[in-house]
Length: 364
Image 1 (cartoon, rainbow, N blue to C red):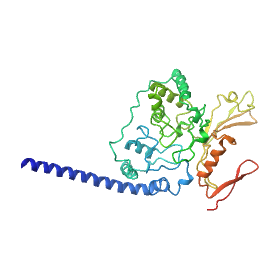
Image 2: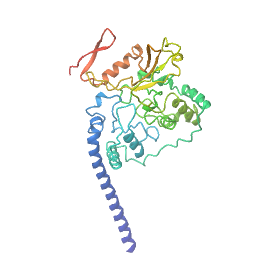
Image 3: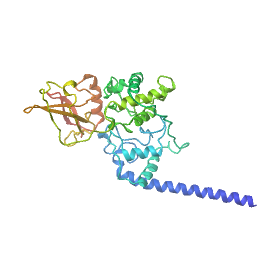
Image 4: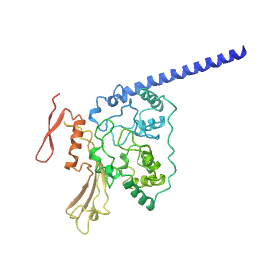
């Protein structure tokens, strides 16, 4: 009888504990819904399908939480993110997209929001909690590592999307689409501060092993398992990509300092003529004031250098346009962009004398 009573007490205790935990989760989800409705629903939609009122003006589109396809993770390709992964995306945002970081949210609000986000997809709660991959140890950088990384860049066919110089202008770039069939841009690897998940060697290595689910960016693990590249070569590739440009956005300044060219002003914009001249970076955003507003421009910044000879001034302005417009190879891509974006009810119908699209209102 004592044994039966003790078992019953344990059973009742377990049931009570489970009920308490379930009630706690429900309370957290309810609190998370309040945070979501206030800060997230306009983009991600009331039901989490990435179809909020602002979504059609954005590329890439806001995350569809019902599909549980998360790009920035420490888990394997096709796997769910950890809570820490979800927290990092909320706190830091996704550079290069319209998803900002949310430093205004408290730790408790983020915890509740994560619980609520999981309610959108049936994939959460099935099986054990996701576990991060083992990313190994960095064997180190240096000239030899960069040379090996450059070779791995070609072996892994990275240039087909990202281009030989890493500017997102490879031969396959105009054809890239996300899981929804919407056009997507290959990352400009020379602007590491816009890379999803961070631009350090460790961040880049992580993205290569996890892949970016929902995009054409695969995981490098299959290539490692099949012997195409070794684990060390993937690290060296990460070092090589990190060397393509600054790891952080350059300091923004209001004034361009212009040096004196004692030997005369450069006749052109060749690299040799401007070698050693300090560059200044100016980020650009979409034209969002006048119709047709554009929330997804392809040119996101300018580099400016200047020289003078005492009487005249020369400025060298550089920017990267992955579409190399006007380039016929990108015409179909431009059409896809136009079709995917809500440009305030306007669409291009013809080109003006300067080759720019003229617009007229859509009929709906």
